[in-house]
Image 1 (tube, one colour):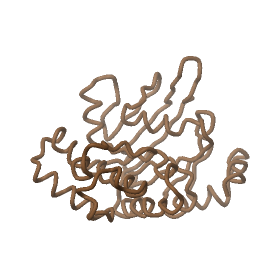
Image 2 (image 1 turned 90 degrees about the vertical axis):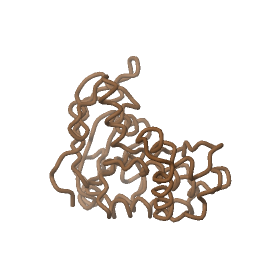
Image 3 (image 1 turned 60 degrees about the horizontal axis):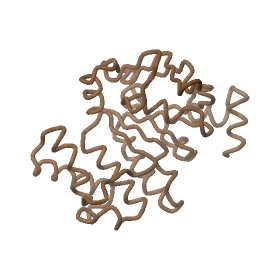
Image 4 (image 1 turned 45 degrees about the vertical axis):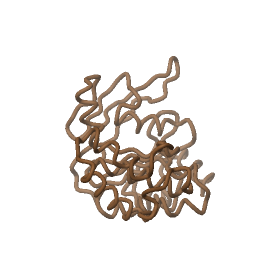
Length: 246
């Protein structure tokens, strides 16, 4: 279980798309080493919320602090935060014209200013960790969806982030490929990585999460341990949601 040492603090976060109030005063504290799973129906604001953590989405009201840095419009703060926050998306977003190895080493070389040799050494270690070392010199189009998503995870880890965000990382995968990606995420959790995961994978949430949270209509509805969330939900909205996915 994570020690009580906040690394993400979101306070009364609001966001609008025009007239649409997509985040309605959301507050959340995530501690170092904690795994938090966000669940909820489509359009509930889950993905938008976690994308505010690294300024992929702007918010209009409230405050977000990442590892002691207040997320503001100051580009220096945004750059500092993005160096510490890795993100894996639903779509893999790999560069198709670069090999797997080059996809992973690009950011460490250009952003961290590492030598090519150092970046490649770490990349090979990460490819071994996610179980696809033999794919290093192939191109993304030569890989399965599950393999591409594991490359995307390795690419995010290559920046040695303190926090990993996962935005429905298995929803674009064929069912038989989901397990291999979730196994990598389980490994990260066991190693103490701070993780915020938007997913509908109930088995993963039960097994790995320290907390499971339901979002709906831009608000946090319920938060609890996996046991309390899935077996003893307090809110009627949570019970209705679980009846549809379990």
